[in-house]
Image 1 (tube, rainbow, N blue to C red):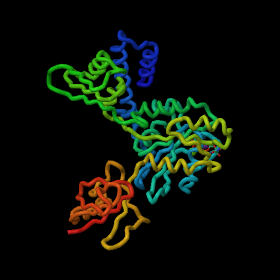
Image 2 (cartoon, protein in one colour):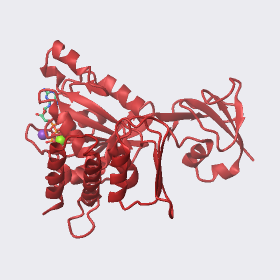
Image 3 (cartoon, rainbow, N blue to C red):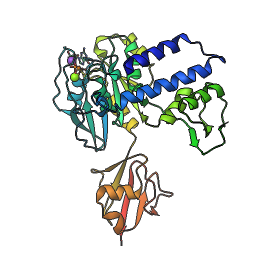
Image 4 (tube, rainbow, N blue to C red):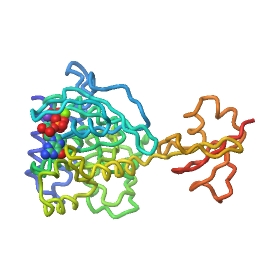
Length: 369
Ligand SMILES: Nc1nc2c(ncn2[C@@H]2O[C@H](COP(=O)(O)OP(=O)(O)OP(=O)(O)O)[C@@H](O)[C@H]2O)c(=O)[nH]1
Ligand SMILES: [K+]
Ligand SMILES: [Mg+2]
């Protein structure tokens, strides 16, 4: 039996099993089993074609962040990417027009953002159908994923794409679950929780642990609504947490009433790539979701240069990160920095050191030794 068949078999068994007190141990076991099989698909160990590597599909990364376009064929990914970046990517009504990753760049608020147009994927992509695995492997390395949907097609496509990405260890619009698993030498299993366990019970936790042969561990659950899948994710450890926007394309072909319904879908932006409708909102949402930090440097006695921000990523935006992104020697030469803006304690400028965390649109003067 192939890995894919084994997964399918377990999924069928899970679908048949009602969740209750008597079955939760069994279900926990099955969830862990699936995760282990999926790991084989993501990282094929030997001889199975290296489908997880993104081989041949990855491109040189430029810009401060990258956005990958994922969707079924002919939803309009290339139409959008071409118009957004001015880079040619072939468009046609024939499915699978785009055969490899096509990179382009769009500048938003002075920040160059790399856009990756990707081939269309089909259901079963992460199980090795079509080139879906290479496509999803590229998506795994992006800072933001645009899930492009055709509003003329069934909305169920949204769930299909989501589960393809999830099957590949990508978690969309989610934070890592607040669960810790600490291995120890002896003492058995100890479970503590600071929140009520509403979606997981001790039997299920024990089943998952036993499946991973974790016999001596301290488990602390602080995540409200934590599930067995969350626990599996923490144990597996190779998950990536990426924000996603749902781009609902081809709204030129629907009525205003239908459009109102689309607006109810969270994290979505209805657009028409062909007629360039509502693309400004898409660019705004893209900017907000990427959550970048623009910093304007100010030479001594001069006005800040507002035309050329240094763009940093949230979580990697200290004065030291700023120095390093200008020149690798600057951090060593710096005596102190002065910061104006949201991260500063007061408006007349705050004197700070290398570990100070900057905020979007701060102005910084670096004083050298
Ligand atoms: N009505 C309408 N048609 C569109 C829109 N955007 C794209 N199309 C059409 O949809 C078809 C597919 O467009 P592509 O950009 O090639 O789609 P794709 O998702 O890149 O397709 P693959 O590369 O094959 O996966 C073309 O005939 C486009 O002209 C839109 O906003 N409205
Ligand atoms: K196409
Ligand atoms: Mg295309």
